[in-house]
Length: 436
Image (cartoon, rainbow, N blue to C red):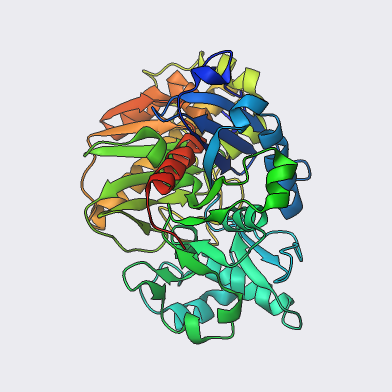
């Protein structure tokens, strides 16, 4: 059920001549590893691969190492056809870096870390109703990083933004999806409240819509990676939004990403607002949803992959466990409840490991049900079915438990990773005339 449980490799042929036209590369940085997908003009995946972070998730330099290794492992004939690339990163993970060369000044602040002591300051800066007016948002982490580095120049960039800067050798740019939790207002096309006039302003990126051409690869980076020098770097998105782009949901569909965390997204005709809820512009529509800290990371604490498969098969779906778990990996939740002090509930543990796993899966299904209801209460259209992606979408028993709890059809689509959504965004940018 993990992020990088099995890399998928698809071949478009034994020679580059069998790959029609240009190719677009999508890169997805998840909480436990990096995955890439290479799509041709018909949206067929001709290459996919994944790897873990070499020095842990919070090591920014390790992101660069992992991405570089995956790109260089693409067969040379396919690399030669890459016309554009886009990156998706974990939503809200923030890195302090040097303005001159982008080098990390400290470990990244991960998406799940909240700073309750910054909540009032976030509210004053962002204003009531802004997604950034939360102790669990990126603005709180930005204020924390600024405070630690107040005597030195710095830039604040999300994962996808920082890596795009590395590829361009130009760290000016940000994208509207990643910057939402930092305080970007997509309706006003400006920073919310007084953020843009605050001491934080010089640290912030110049925000562009996802799919915007930011420029070609820096020549030295192209040489190092073996990519064409005219390969375009496209403004990216978050991993949750990339998952939505990968499956192409229809009206009435919800998308649940079952990775280390659980992300709920749906396409809405207008934005919705609420604590822990985010609305990202997508053309004339909006990708709305939220991300829970609950997810596969809790399962991995107690079981390895083999045990998860074996024990799941022993679950009797006709008999509820009777356990009432709230399977958070640590104190604090973002969605459906925005509560940095919310405590996990993982006891009592029964003697039976299969029953314990069933209780955990039921608890995760309850969080998902609460999440979909929360979105509907805030004005999102009701959903008629859920499409599941991510490592957890490989578990048929979990799908059935979720379907019973949600009362609607749940489909598993584990073969459509967010990296494919990032590659589709790269295609959009390549075909568009919009440039930074």
